[in-house]
Length: 118
Image 1 (cartoon, one colour):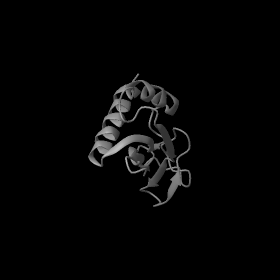
Image 2: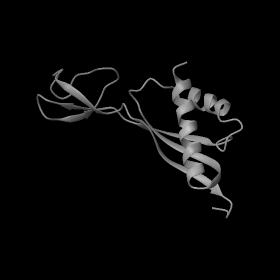
Image 3: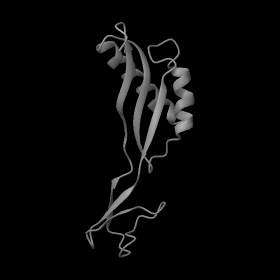
Image 4: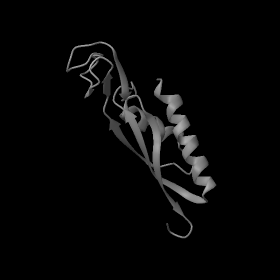
């Protein structure tokens, strides 16, 4: 259920930006989503179908690209893909790590239509 507020925000932002540029329809919204977020893409799309009804974004497709989770180790200085839910360096075993990618969630770009056919 926590996908609903974020999905409403996506719709609101898309509609505001479409109106700002004089678009008549939002066709696609490209989202970057870190694999370490706990959002479920199919649920976001389902909620989006509901919250976008009657707006410029109705019928738009959400294209969600997953950003891999990557750790930086403060002990050895290495950067490595995070093993699922293991907050330790796969190279040296240290737990002195930070997540440098994998928690992102943002609109990367949009595709819109305008009256002049673009």
